[in-house]
Image 1: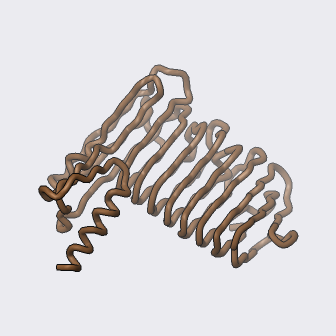
Image 2: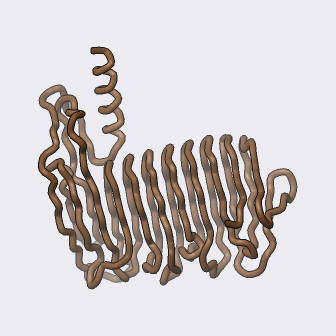
Image 3: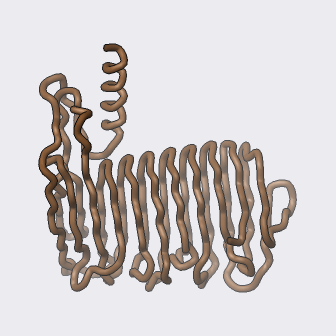
Amino acid sequence: MKKSLLIAILVVAMTTMACGINIDWPLTQVKTGPVQTDDISVPVPDSTPPIKLNLSFGAGKIDLAPGAENALVSGTATYNVEDFKPVIKTDQNGVSIEQGNLNIKGIPDFKDKIQNDWSFKLGATPINLKVNAGAYSGQYELGGLSLKSVDITDGAADVNLEFSKPNVVEMDTLSYHTGASNVTLEGLGNADFATMIFRSGAGSYTLDFSGEIKRDAVVSIESGISSLVLVVPEGVPANVSFEGGLSNVDMFGSWKKSGDTAYTQDGSGPKLTILIKMSAGSLQLRNK
C-alpha cells in the first residue's frame, strides 16, 4: 500500500513538471483512449519574415526536419489522450502549436501507455524557432533551413540535434536550456550563429562544432555536475576558458593547454571563443 502511494505521488510530481498540465484531484482516474493521428498543415503567414514559430510540448517524442512544401509546418501529431490534441494559433506575432492541456482528476492509471508523438517538417521560409518542452525525447534535423534564431528549453530530455547542411541565412543566436538530460548537438558549425548559449543541469552533453564555420562566434556554456564533450575540427582556431569546480580535463588531437584554465587550438579562418562555467565534472576537448 505504501509503495503504491509513493509511486502515485512520484508520478503526479513528475507530471506536473511537464508543460500544459493541471492537477485537480482526487476525483476520477485518467485513462488513455484510441490512438488518433491529426494531419498538421500550417501555411506561411502573410507577414514579413522571419516568422515566429513556437512549439509547446509536454512529454513524448518530437521529430523535426526540413521538407514542408509550400507551408510553414506540415506533418502529423499522434496521441492516445484526447487532451493532448494540438492547438494551432496564428496571429500577427507568428504561429504557435501547443499540446492541449491534460486535466488530471484523480491518480493516473499506470497500466496504459501514453503516446504523444509530433513528426513535423519545416518549410524554407526564414523562421525564429522556439521550442518549450517537458520531459521528452527529441530528434531535430535542422540542416538546410533558414533559421534566424533557435531557442529550445526542455526538462529531463534525451535529444539529438543536428545541422547536417549549412543554415541558409545567418543565425543571430542559438540558445539551448535543459535540465538533467542527455543531449547531443552536432554540425553546429553549419548553424552559422554569432552567439550560442548552452545552459544545463547535471547530465551528459556533447557539442560538436563540425561543419562550415563562416564567421567568428562566441559560445557561452553553464552546466551543473556534468560530463561535457566539445568537438572542434582540426584547423579551426579556438580558445576555451573555464571557471568553477571543473575537476578533470582531457585533451585529444591538436588541443594545447594555455595557462591554468585555458586551452587553445591553432588554425586559420573564423575563430570560436568558448567560455565554460561548471560546478564539477569532466571536460573532453576533441577534434572528432
